Image 1 (cartoon, rainbow, N blue to C red):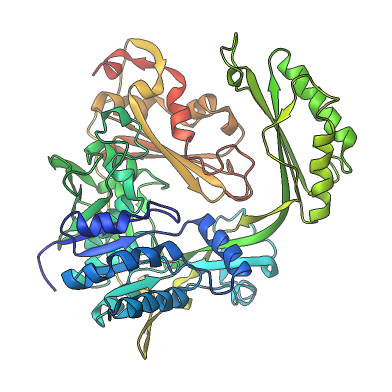
Image 2: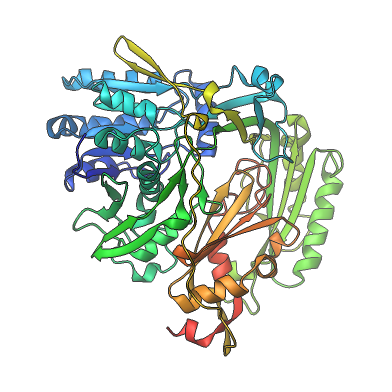
Length: 588
C-alpha cells in the first residue's frame, strides 16, 4: 500500500482499435499499468462466431500481437498489464501470451481471471428465478439458443492476481472500469467498503476506457482539438482517495479539457448513479477542474454500496436477415420508391407477412437541384428477418436483382452482390445475484475463488447529489440556430436502448437545458424517438442532461435495422437540429 498516485494508461477501446496503441503508451511516457478494453456487447457475439469457425479463437488476438511488441519493455520497467482481451477464452489468451513470451525468452507471471461465463448455467439459473431480465418488461428469449452469456465481474479478482505477483492479468468479461479500479485498489490497499475511493477509480476507468474519446476523439467541438488527425490515448493518475488526473503523453495529438472529460462522462450512462459490481459510483457528485494544459482533475466522486446484482450480457441466435438497399435518384423519389418496393414483392418468393420481421425505410438523403449524383440519391432499405434462412436467403436477394432492368429509371443497388441470409444475434441483458458468480484467479498452479461484494455485509449509504445553485432561466431573447451552436453531445448504445447526453459550456446554457429541454422537445427534434419511452436525467455538476431512449436500436446492434445501429451519431444529428436558444447562450 502506498500514498503515491498510480498512473494507469489505456491502449485500446474496442476490438480493432489502433494496433500501435500499446507501444505508444509504453514508450511515450512514464506509466505504472497498461490497460485496455477489447469487449463490447457486440464483440462477445463476434468472438462466438470466430470461436465457432476456429475453436480456441475466442479472444482478442490483436492483444497478443501488442504483447509481443511491448512485453519486454513492460517487464524491464515494472509496468503491469491488465486487460479484458480474454473475451470468451481468457485461459487460451493467457496461453497464447505465454507462448509469445517463450519465443522472446521472457518469463512474465501471467494470470487469468474467469467465472463470468454463465452459458452452461442460464437454464438452471432462470428456472430457479435467479436470472431475470434487465428491465421488467423484457424477456429472456429462448435460453437454449444462446451463444454467449457473460456476467460483468468486478475488480477484486484482478486485485488478487496482482497481489499474487502477476505481471500480466488477462480477464474475460469484467466491467470496463474494473481494469483501472483493480490496479488502483491493489496499489492503494483499499478495502471493499472504501466506497468513495472505489467510486473515484470507477470514474477514472469509465473516462479512459474508450481510448481517444477523452483526449478529443468523437468530441462535438472537434475543431478546437489540436492534432485531431492522430489523437493520443489517455492515462489516469489515481490518488489514494480515488481522485484522479486525466492526461495524455506529451507531444501526442488531441486535448484533455473539462469539455472532453464532461463529454466522456456522459458516454453510455443512464442517471447519476453508475451501477457496478464493486460500488455504485455517483457521477452526479464529480467535480471537474482544469489544473494544467492536458491535465484535468476529477474529484469528489462519492460511492454507495453496489446493488448486489451483476449485469449479464447474453446473445441469442436470432435467426437470419437479408438487407437490400436501392438507390432512388432524381425526381419523383416517393413514387420511384413505391414502384421499386412493389416490383420487389412481385418477384419475391415471400411476402412481408411471410417472414418474422419486415422493415422498409426510405431515407431522403437527396437534395434539391443536386450538384452531384450522390446528392440526387435517396436510399430505400428493405430488411427481412426470419429463423429459417431459406425464407430470407439467396432467392430473396435474387428477386431484387431481377428488377434491375425492368423497374424504376436509374436503378442500382447500394447493398452489394446478392447472397444468402446472414445470421444475426439478439442482445438479451439480464441480472443475476452477485453471490452466485465468484471470480476465479489462475496463476501457475494456483487457483483461488474470489467472491463478489455482497452489499448485505455492509451498512447502507445514501449520497446526496451536488446542489444545483444556478437560478431559473427567466424571460430571455431567443434566436433560432442549430442546437450544436451552444451545446455538445455524446451518444451510444446500451443494448436495444440508446443514450444521448447533452452538455452546456456555461451556467446560462445549463439553465436552458435544465428548464426547457425535456423529453417532449427531444421527441420533436428526433422523430425516430417520437413513439418511444424516454428517461431523462439531470447532472447539474456536469451541466448536462442525459436521455435514454428505450428500444431505439430494436434488439441490439446486431439486429438493428437503423443505418447507425450503435447510435454513435445520434448526438451529432441532434446538434444539427434547429431550436430557439437564448442569445446570451449562443454568444457566450
